[in-house]
Image 1 (cartoon, rainbow, N blue to C red):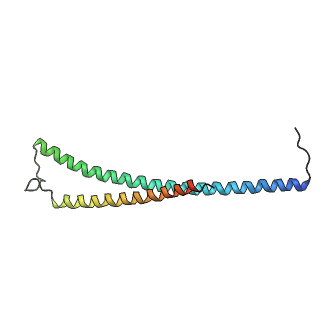
Image 2 (image 1 turned 180 degrees about the vertical axis):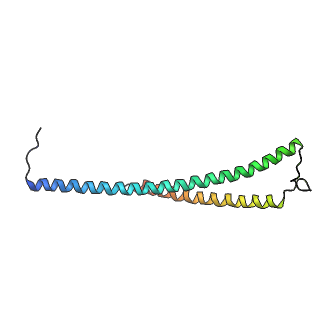
Image 3 (image 1 turned 60 degrees about the vertical axis):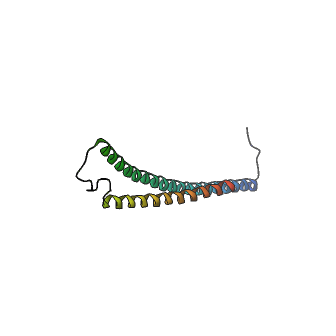
Length: 128
């Protein structure tokens, strides 16, 4: 099947339109790649914060569950304070620092997640 012959001006017009569409598509692809990079970075920050929070909470909870198991089995250690049930100053300070870190990381994760969700909502409202 042969296309009808067209004059040179029509060919040049079509070629310029094709080139214009090609550059538009390339620009959209670059913008989409940039947005994807931002989304991946935000997701990595959120996941990292949540993982760190999980490990901090798990380590705190793990220590307390070990202590409760030892108390249930009736074993005593030399590391216990003389009063018996009162935690040492070091463990109290450590748990407070860990709680502060958990609160900070959860706040950071919340902020990143909120920013990401707002950006997604704007994208959904204004598709281009």
